[in-house]
Figure 1: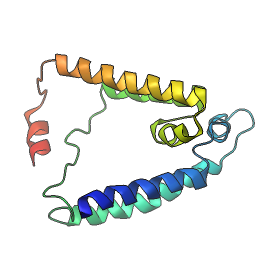
Figure 2 (figure 1 turned 90 degrees about the vertical axis):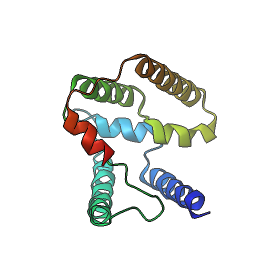
Figure 3 (figure 1 turned 30 degrees about the horizontal axis):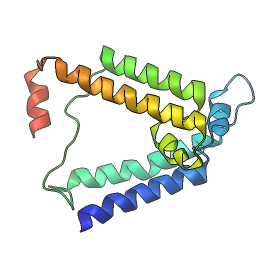
Length: 153
């Protein structure tokens, strides 16, 4: 039961934070990104607050042998900056800058039934689907055996 309730509570807290911070308002996000125009720095406070909460949380989690509600941790095993990471970050940034939405706020904004939001979410889901199909078609060849060991624990 707690493995069902915990994600629900985390999602509700996350969604409430998005609403309170204004992250679901594309105009607010676009104003934050407009550093050479009518810049609104208020979302920088949201990001700083997120780091202030997440950093100690991760530090505490790393001290535990295993998570509270799971059998093991699933920490990323890869930390290098490579072409797929840079390309993905660039595409994310372009999309965020063009419409002022990223996945979390877009899903939350679906409640408005705004045609633009619906189109964004459909395009986002299509991109995720196509990415998964593309990744599944590629052979898995680890570049560094230490990455595999780190990911396996």
